[in-house]
Image (tube, rainbow, N blue to C red; front, side, top):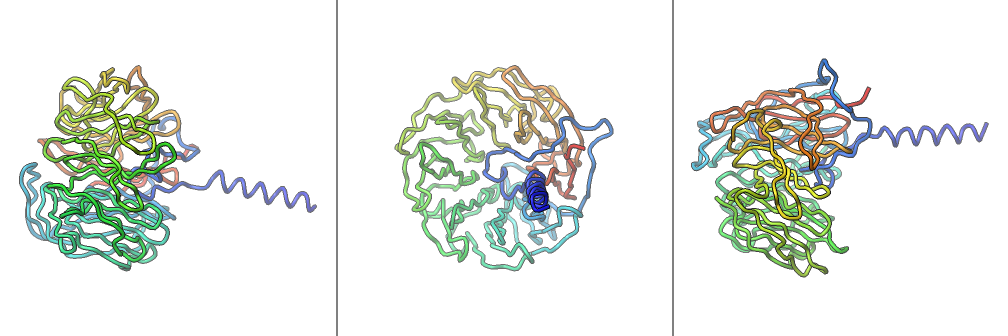
Length: 440
């Protein structure tokens, strides 16, 4: 009987481990790799569509949701006064409430909300940009005008806060603060702005500044990105003048590479594969770098030309094997590019806008799962597809939610979804949706 009891205990333990749900606690997933590692996920969508578990009402925003510990966190903006023009070159003035919302992942019930009155003076002003960053019993949020908060996961109470404009004399970028905060050990690293403080590391528990680094005319929009090469971690900070590698614990600059995107749009996170680092943006600004040993620098392997590489902006490219898969911002299509030389192998509009002609900033977000990819596009469609050197192969497609924002004469949803608990969590300017992707 004792042997039987032990066997039952181990069976229950392993069963629990196998069925334990994954979290998506920050931008691009647990390790920022755009990879979903959960098991028991559908191989293709049912003919009658996926199961929508719940829909919850929210307001405007570009912020993607974060999921951790049975809770989903998202930020939005309730407009009180002003008009949204979505003029790429001009700022709109709005007044309203910037909010942090916390929902139950199973039911969609609102557990708590934290709201503060904010004035916006930015282009494309329909709400916050940054995905919340969840770390243990705390969640960190950054508003469009540079208001950083550390909140209790349990009830949303404010533990500490910072104002980048008041505390660092940082000017709000024309398209708002968009660089998702990064937790590294005891540090919370943020893109701030202001003299000598493009990047600032705070003690995540107390908000005390640990270090500040870099000066630039503008801070840009690219999130602080942690990589590891040759056994050493490097913190990458890309502002509109250069890509910089920093020592994470001190902020010491290890190396810099000039890289100036058009319109100051340093946005997409640099992508590492082996010792190869790819960075790209609008204005045919793209470069493949080979990292040197001991974080001593990086050498240029190739630079993109007008008809080579992929110049991503709204979405982050994905590197795999001998390929780069990315969403070109000016053309608006998904492109497969050879890693070794930047040659474009194939391109298609099917997963982005579904059309045949170029669409400025046509967008699809790319997440890898096992041997295939989940793509979420600006039309609100979730797509299961194969991306290979041979081309794009669509397996399934499901319309998750409607495109409620607008740009360049078309309706769009520009918010990265979260993949957790065998579900996809996506939002537009009206609702947060949970759709099951569990295999029956």
